[in-house]
Structures are given as structure tokens and as C-alpha cells.
Amino acid sequence: MAEMTYRSAVGRAIRQEMLHDDRVFLIGEDVAKAGGVFKTTGGLLDEFGPRRVLDTPISEQAIIGAAMGAASAGLRPIAEIMFADFVLVTQDIVANQIAKARYMTDGQMSLPLVIRFGSGGGLRFGAQHSQSVENWMMMIPGLKVVAPSTPRDVIGLFAAAVRDPDPVMFIEHKGLLSSKADVPDGEIVDELGVAKVLREGRDATVVAIGMMVGRALQAAEILSSRGLDIEVIDVRSLVPLDTTTILDSVRKTGALVTVEENPRLCGWGAEIVSIAIEEIFDHIDGPPTRITTPHIPLPHAGVLEDAVIPSVDRIVETVHKLLHQQPRSSSAAAG
Image (cartoon, rainbow, N blue to C red; front, side, top):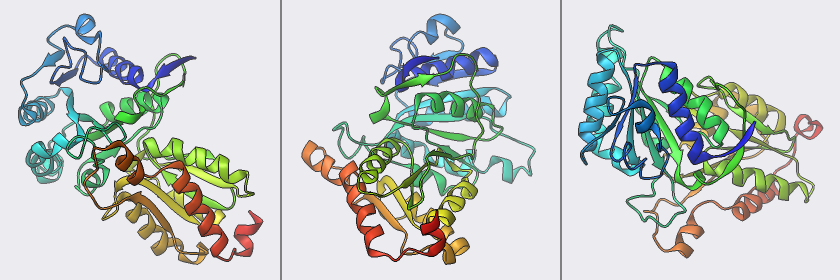
């Protein structure tokens, strides 16, 4: 067990999978000599050489096209697209080719590849370099979508993604790169589609991913001083989605709050709310609540960016208001 940054965990995750399977290789802009624009891939070129760690021209379409070709030939590429915003440049290849290959070949072709990129705001990169794109990715049939919030989960979920037979979008939040946590020694391999209950509670279920997980946990601690016991779930994997863990929690607490950095319209939290309403409506005491970024381009100015991205204070006040407005059922109150 050793303390590790999220940034270092990304490098360890890639190294683990390259050691595990010699079909795995890394391709992207500045991933080799420069060690990555976010310094997550340092040392990999020296260890694995230029045949398995490849710098490319500034062409996202070329990177993803090459990765698709390699995966169809039996390799397992890891393609880096620096900023999540740049995935839009590749969407024809990703959405119309990669995501549909298994279906359109009746299962004769699989494309085991991982596309990884830095997502999210909070670092003053402006509207074109700060977007959260989870909802864009999860709406495309054929893609799996993963968003780890801790260094340990980076490694475990990355292993699951690389070893999966289908394409996986692996979302690394830029605001978490310097965060630290203890990580076990040795190989770590998780399973896609498994959420984690990080904090047990009886009064409300708060569901989050990425950078919002830590803020939800901080909010839960503050709310505990106000006499409220909040359960916090890290979704971790949006596709496949662990609805069992989420719905079991909401049955227990009777209240559902989602915390997402996405713009409000069509966010992933809306999908979870929809599922809860359809499947366990009678167990919910009041209106499910979504805490989101407004439906606007993310501002560059720090004071404005901080004002629109969900904060600990906003989570605290929203949950507190929700629980003091709605009646509590006898089952939820009993916990």
C-alpha cells in the first residue's frame, strides 16, 4: 500500500496492462517523448520502446482511425485524445464505425480498444477545453463509458477497460490529477458496471462521478453535523450502469440526488432519475433532484467557473432543503 496521485495512477494503469498483454500499445499526441500533456505517461517510452508507445501528428482522426484498424487486426490499442472536447473531431469514426462494428458484423468483429481523455472543468481552460462529455458518450449504443474518481479505481477500471472485448471511453477528470490516495500494491483489476457505496446513510442517496464524488462526500460530512445521514454512491461506470446498487439505496433512503458536472440538459443524472421513477416510484418520498452545471458554455473566468460548477456548498444546501421540505415515509425514516 502506498500513497499515489491520480496522475501517477494513470501511468501505472497503462504500464500494468502493457506488461500483462504484449498486444497492448499506447498511441497519441505527445504520449511518448513528452510523457503526455498532463504528464501521465512518463517513462513508458523508455520501458516499452517506440513500437508500443507512439507519438502521432496533431490529428485526432488519424489516432482513432489507426486504433480502430489495429483493434480489428487483433491488437489492443490505448488511444489518448488529450482533452475530452477533441473527441468531437473523431465522432464519425467513434459513433458510426467503432461503436457499430460488432452489431453490423453480427458479432464477427470486435474492437477491443480504449479511448482515454482528460475531461471536466475547474482549471480555467475555457469553454473549448473544459467540457464534461459523459452524456455525449453514453448515448451512443456500442460504447462503454467509465469515469474513475480515485487513483485506485483508475488502475482497476482501466484494467477492466483494456481487457474488455468492446470499445471503452475512459474519462480522466483533469481536476483530480493531483489528488492523492492510498493504492494497494500488485495488480488491480476491477469489473465494469459496478458502483460503490462510499458512505452509508439513511436519509438520502447522493449519486456522483468523477470530481463530484469528493464534493458529495464532503457535503455528506457537513450534513451529518445538521443531523442528516447521507448515503454517497460513486457510479464509476455509466455504461454498463449499476442500477441495482443505486435503486437499492434509494429504496432504503427514499430520496435521490444526482450531482453531475455536465450541462443540465440531457445529463446522465436525468437518465438515473428516469430509471428510478419508472422502477421504484412508490419508494421515493419527494421529487428526485439534479444538481448540475447550467446549460451554458463553461466560463473561463475563475469566479464564474466556480459559480456554475456544482460546489460542496450547493450540494449541502440543496440536500438540506430537499429533506426539510418533503415528508419522510415510515420505511425510509426507519432506515
